[in-house]
Amino acid sequence: MSARIEIADDPARACAAMLVGACADAGHVVLTGGSTPKAAYEELVKTVASVNVDLSQTTFWFGDERCVAPEDERSNYGMARAALLEPLGEANQPRVERMQGELGPGAGADDYEERLKNAGPQEFDLLLLGIGPDGHTMSLFPDQPTLQERSRLVVGVERAGLEPFVPRISLTLPALRRARQVVVLASGEGKADAVAAAFAPDAEPNPRVPSSMLAEFAPELIVLIDPAAASRL
Image (cartoon, rainbow, N blue to C red; front, top):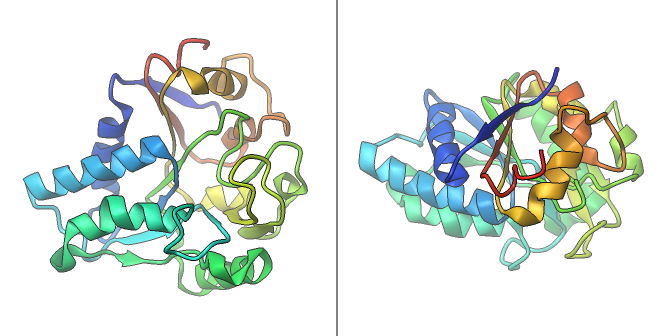
């Protein structure tokens, strides 16, 4: 299948609306790191407050994590906690299944693999991804062996291909098959080349551009971007 491109002046706000729908009825949602997802989480907090959405039965998972402590400023969980979880307030806290980056890439990946297999849903309602300027997504970097993993849901990434250069934990491409909907969120001209390389009509799956490989695995793939990020499509 091919990706569906959706262009919005404010992709973070549009994503927040999608997140509200996915969180309803005890939904399972996979979060990601990055500046545009952070803005989407902040918009989600506003939406939840304005329309009184109950998130107490929602479960948040993570698509990747840096192997740092949760208090570290580089932690994806730490960002989500500050932008989303804490502002929601104690009375409306979702269940959170974070990747334990402090365990290291190998043990951390094994721990999350077991939790997904034993306590994870049969289907994620929404799996949110970003795209790096090099075309990477989650912590799957260009030309790395992790792109060829087909038996595991989670892998350790010993060497990051982009700053910050710390080991990572990441979902694999086959894990996307568990998602009802996969959304790639990006904004800004700095992402335009990567978006075009991954999702232009003539783009082919290419391990040099990991995001170009998403469509093979995602049951439904939406690329939610602003006009600047779409400028080279």
